[in-house]
Image (cartoon, rainbow over all chains, first blue to last red; front, side, top):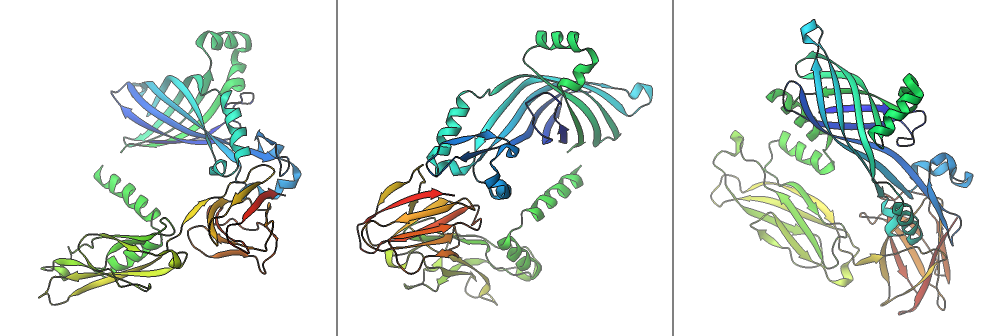
Length: 199
Length: 227
């Protein structure tokens, strides 16, 4: 079981702010692991222009009208965005070099989904705005590719960091790397730190 | 590894302790054989209060040789006590005139006749019955038709928004209560042909009961939101 915290890429719009998540891992062998990763991505907000509608959204809180600025903690018109990634991992332990380290490389589909707030049951205008947004929402983001380094001080714990890339396709990723070179890391990589315990 | 799992499980159990969990913890510390996790339903049913609980643990030396005969269920409501129950749940019928009133239900563990002690201790919880429907806030407002002298609704309110009710032909009242508690959030008095409340609290997870009482039966009202 890993718990992780990530920072969004500078230019990517998948994660708009720092995110937290958890990863349930199955260690199949010394080199192969499977995991199911979940991350909470974001809150996004809706608001009515007047008591007669229409409803605007989803928007980040920074784009809400000033009249509502004091109500962020109690705002009931929102949706939450979630990220799910089943992954397969190749782990290369560096024990042979005398270091308690391992390089890990993971890949798998990246899936996101939305959950509207319960207020949608009581405000049909909000429900309509959410439904309209969901029609164009991309549930399947593409591929999730991970590259990281983990530190294993004890057999039951590990810590580390990794880069998470969410890409539409491998050829597109290759083209971007060719175009941006090393800067691709900053443009598209989400940086994660993680801590894991083996149960 | 087993110790680690126990540590994680213990932390999860402590973190999930609510008020009734605290009572259970107290009972465990005092080695009581009172029912555990007693819960009386809070407005979940129109005509009943559902009561459920768990059997106490009799594993300590104090309760060696004791056997539970059943549970004695009493309440402070207007009808007879449910009496002895041999399972771990029961249903107390509530007639329409006694809805929206909190009652205290007490469940006592009873040991088999011949035991040195007959009572293993008791636990109590408040519960009430309520007949509700959803109050939905359409853009521009909408008309609701009442059937009967009053009606209870469940809704979500946004702090800072104003919620208005108009009774077209006779003055009425609108009272707001925190969901699942019946604690008053706002009362409208006296009766008037229009009532409004600018919500200034978060209720129970932003949910509220709204009790609408028109001036005369079988009237409609208009409900709208604004800010």
